[in-house]
Amino acid sequence: MVAGKEGRTPRERYRSQVRAEIKERAREQIAASGAPGLSLNAIAKQMGMSGPALYRYFAGRDDLITELIRDAYRSLADAVRAAAAPGADLAGLGRALRAWALDDPQRYFLVYGTPVPGYHAPDDVTTIAREIMATLLDAARLTEDHADSPGLEAHLAQHRQWAGDHPADPAALRRALSFWTRLHGVLSLELAGHFTGMGFDPAVLYGAELDRLTHAVP
Amino acid sequence: MVAGKEGRTPRERYRSQVRAEIKERAREQIAASGAPGLSLNAIAKQMGMSGPALYRYFAGRDDLITELIRDAYRSLADAVRAAAAPGADLAGLGRALRAWALDDPQRYFLVYGTPVPGYHAPDDVTTIAREIMATLLDAARLTEDHADSPGLEAHLAQHRQWAGDHPADPAALRRALSFWTRLHGVLSLELAGHFTGMGFDPAVLYGAELDRLTHAVP
DNA sequence: CCGGTCCGGTTAGACGGTATCACCGAAGGG
DNA sequence: CCCTTCGGTGATACCGTCTAACCGGACCGG
Image (cartoon, chains in turn yellow, brown, cyan, blue):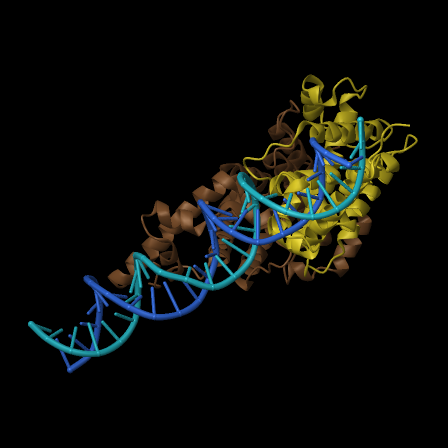
């Protein structure tokens, strides 16, 4: 079996365990105060250690946040992969996406929130993003919808490098892209609280958008 | 004439002038490093003053950011109002929204970016948001589209408190909401850089979404 | 014109955060 | 059994917000 993170030596076991606890506390802090409120000092104090000890486990605050972003991407990829397991269509994917987002809004924002102008995601994150897109394209091929946008599909047919060598026709590219942007539109506004106090149920709006993405309406 | 900000007394003139310059520098910093990178100290240094002087003009960092958020909302309301001036439909509104967003992405994120969990927008901001929504509803009444979502429209017909006493039928409510969420979906992903390297032109995608929101397709 | 008040600016400093450094003790492997 | 390596410590530099005490000049009524 491949060498998992489960420790070979006791030292490594302890190390990955402490790393895990640091990340857990970090997630709690982010859930409570958002990503900019994350404080290494506070985490160390919570764990009974004193400040600089954490630098044995993470190169710095940015490194820790990057790690959390990586985990968030992995978690999203897992959720999406699970929902699309054996040739499922976009509908289940959409429901899984919303469940994943509501389960931990700040995790969603780690992936899709306001970016720091200077920040560049590491390569493996973009690899995971590519895998998510591939899964999305798979499901988009198996889904029929009504609408078509000749102009957009023509454009996508000529600019499909983001799909790699995926065997998806322009209509599937369009479906995947609209799926992504429309559901993100509803989700991000909902999670950011822009619907609070408006009175309607965001789930209904989300469901309606998902319906129009996945059903061939008359 | 109403008392504008243009100074009555020289003191007030000077004060609002310094406040304006502080906000200008703050906008520059936010554009360069994002909202969390805003530093009062750096602004003071840039202006040739020393740290605490800025507290004569703003109660603190949060107060300054809140003021910038207020300005961003006002700017968006102005742009939307100008685009919808004499009974225009959603198409022009959509183009104006994208232009406004691309003109200053960080300003867009001040309005629609990742929220700080504890933060609550002041009342006048929600008032401006309401005005934007009213303008959007006006335009949505004058626009015909093809799609309909009976379930969503029925739900909105019963939960229309966010529309206040606006004379908009359920279809218009649905159009306004979809307009908001779909265009935000494309815009926020584009501004966050999630389309970079994918090869296609976000403007085409945005245009296609706007088309389907404003044209009665077969 | 003059005196008092208000206002905008200063320095000093408390406090908390990131991050580096030198040092120490103990666990672990040869 | 020794020695290396690793995890943890306190001290420290630096930067950030924000408060406090203080000062000088602009503004205002008389």
